[in-house]
Image (cartoon, rainbow, N blue to C red):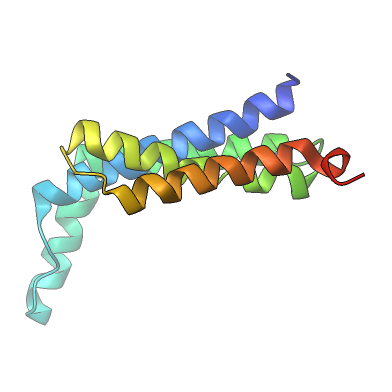
Length: 127
């Protein structure tokens, strides 16, 4: 595996970790308040929450990883690999938040993985 594809993998992992971290932070903070005068203090809570801030940092690391890969990878191959983020987020959500994954979600995860497999086979699959 070339370094560029390692960067694609890191983008997937750090994007998923970012989402889990931000979800944890927002679970601590709660929903957006209905009253307009409470919105600014609510935004302050968001900007002070370590889980949200670490999620933003992980998202930045994911973006830098992705940008590092882009000059050397074929976008038509690498971009579909980012859909592994959906798979990883679902699995991490089940582990971290005890969310249940339904049969339909498992089927969707299988379709995503199969789609990535097809993309990874590239044109050799059809030629």
